[in-house]
Length: 203
Ligand SMILES: Cc1cc2nc3c(=O)[nH]c(=O)nc-3n(C[C@H](O)[C@H](O)[C@H](O)COP(=O)(O)OP(=O)(O)OC[C@H]3O[C@@H](n4cnc5c(N)ncnc54)[C@H](O)[C@@H]3O)c2cc1C
Image (cartoon, rainbow, N blue to C red; front, top):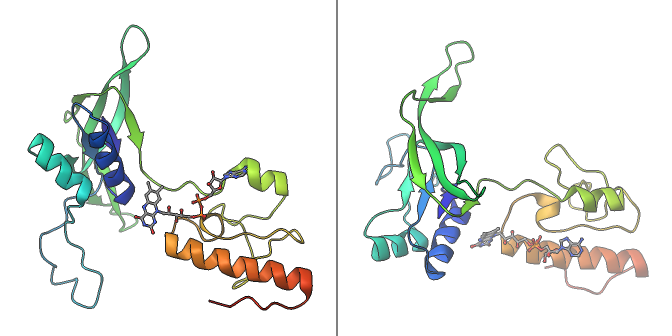
């Protein structure tokens, strides 16, 4: 198993792969490994930017004896066997460099650092891609640049009258608590729109 993406979803993929009995699991992360303790530029009360080893990675350590993550790397190529099935993944090391023209940090591939990882299944856990286009097209609702369904702030009715939205397709990649809250508020907005008033609780 090769998991592309070192975030929470990637960690879930690692744990799930192990529980399904995978022979090996590797998780590819583009970013450098975070430090064990807060840096001086990351004081309390900021969110601590430290290396987190979550349950999936802990399970990998317990089962295979090592952390499944490979940092500062990305996938260059999927390699197939003569039957067209995936047999390996070619990865390459990355280095972060400041672009002298823009001043922004950019990732550059390190020539000659390619490595082959045997793989039968690859899971991509590298980012929420927004709403499903076939759904937003079917309802003809307006979407924003990130393809989330547009509403006026604090509202749940879309650009199409009587069509409401909530949760990830409204606010983008988020959390269950937000989905619950938005679901309740959207239900309230629907009730109000149908009845002209609502007795549903706001929270
Ligand atoms: C791997 C992973 C791990 C996560 N871990 C966490 C976590 O630990 N904690 C946390 O808080 N959040 C987590 N999240 C995020 C959380 O799951 C989402 O924020 C939340 O589920 C969003 O709820 P939702 O109702 O907006 O959308 P969803 O839960 O995605 O529900 C949308 C539903 O619509 C259905 N659907 C789609 N198209 C159609 C259609 N055409 N017709 C009818 N139904 C349709 C889908 O089948 C789905 O059931 C995780 C997400 C992922 C992917």
